[in-house]
Amino acid sequence: MQQPNEAETAAPELSRVLIALFQGVVHQDAKPELWQSLLKLQARVRDYVAVLGLELVLDEAEGYAYLQQHEPAEGEAELPRLIRRRQLSFPVSLLLALLRKRLAEHDASAGDTRLVLTREQIVDLLRVFMPDTANEARLMERLDSHIKRVEELGFVRRLKNEENSFEVRRILKAFVDAQWLGEFEERLATYRQHLSEQENDG
Image (tube, rainbow, N blue to C red; front, side):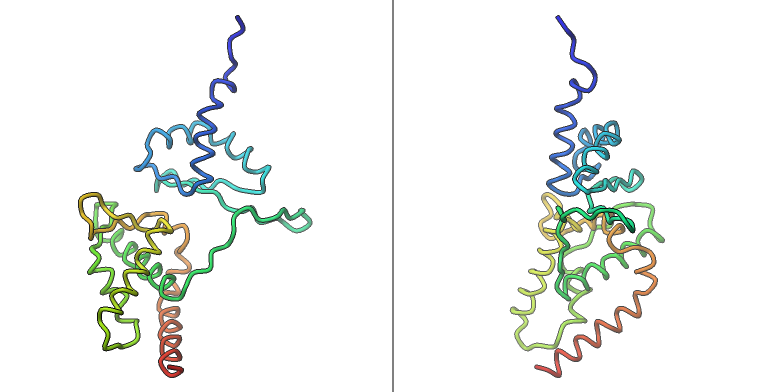
């Protein structure tokens, strides 16, 4: 009987890795076995997704991986986009910036790599930028919707058995880089101007 070769043996494992990547971000701490398969098969994964105009972004030190659209070089044929760009609302993009700043401060001061914030702490970060309102319940509802959106995007994870606590996922560093963070104060001034204009328009 003919024995399967190495590529045939690894095919189901490669399929599991590819399916997980097409579904979203793969985190080492959430799926350690899948993560090991990804490390082992990453060359084949890169070859496979390149055919579709995609690139594998893998940060072994931070423990996350995801797919992004390959941006063609000059003279290179451009393929239809398989991964759409996400348009974030102003409060959600502001919350991501504030969480990224907290993560940088945490990394500079703590030995623990995990940053865990309560819902109340996240609300306090954001509410100072929200327009004044007499309807506190409505404001809390809006802030919770922004937190939920950030959770859906995978930048925070609600802790099991601690309904009101969230871990800030380290993949946030890939989307808000050090250069962007260095311009944080300037961007906050832009946000404040945006809010001021909203209030004047209201």
